[in-house]
Amino acid sequence: MTRSEPYHHANLRQTLLDAAVTLIGEVGPRAFTLREVARRAGVSHNAPYRHFMSKDELLAEVAAEGFDRLTASMRKSMARATSPRKQLQECGCGYVAFALRWPQHFFVMFDLPQALHGQEKHQAAGQNAFAVLQECIAAAQQAGDLPAGDLLPLAWMAWSFVHGIAKLAISGNLPLNARSTIEFTRSASQTIFGGMKAGSSGYGIR
Image (cartoon, rainbow, N blue to C red; front, side, top):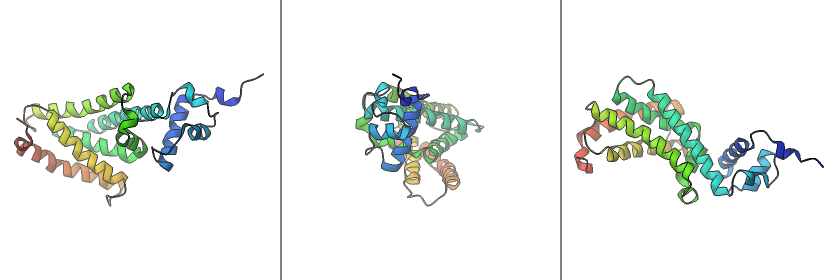
């Protein structure tokens, strides 16, 4: 007897991840099934269980992949910055650029908290991405572009700002194309981050 072709599928894990992302783009992160992912990947319906114990574990892997790509996108944008303030602005542009390029990952990362709860790889990847923003905030504080003190409230404000733009953009509620969305993010951040410095005490930052 010979094994069926699906079990010889090259890089099955990544193939399943790619199939899941494609399916999520069509039916959303809540409606897809492992059986349909397997069919899209061209493998038997039992093949996904060789790598993922459940649909939630597969979703957590998609989210972790997304956070890794988010980290890379932010760092790539930051590389063109010439000052801590510009670096912080470009970090936000990288965040929005990621969402525009990989909206399916974005939805899984932030719209399925119950499915992703307790998944260590997803949590670690998310912490790595947030650490990039924290580094930017700390550098801006040191340069005097943001007030000294606890950096977390400042990071939360910066994150909320760019996340809102990203969410509006990928849901079709921001009437701008991708390039204009990034330019809007860059220009709006100049006002937002200036306001964070001037009005920070009103947010409980000391």
